[in-house]
Image (cartoon, rainbow, N blue to C red):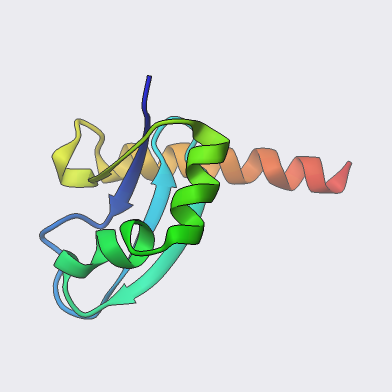
Amino acid sequence: MKTLLIIAPGREATRDSVFNLLVAETGEHLASHLCSHYGFAKSDLYSSRKDRVEEYEKRFGEVEVKYIDETDITEEQLIEINKDWYSKISVEKES
């Protein structure tokens, strides 16, 4: 089973936007990048970054990268999943 990594915002983002790469299932934030156009986000965040490709494949196995608007996940859902992930890691750091 492939691990879905989501790029947000999606393909409707305007110029000069910060794009984020998150794990769809857990909400873990993996990377951010300021892109002048959404068309560069996938390459800037993942495919042209050999180090990230290797790291994520090692961690997650087979990976699929999609823009959020190519999935059934809403931005609100992704934000909630990310909040939950952040809360969990914050608690772990305090322990």
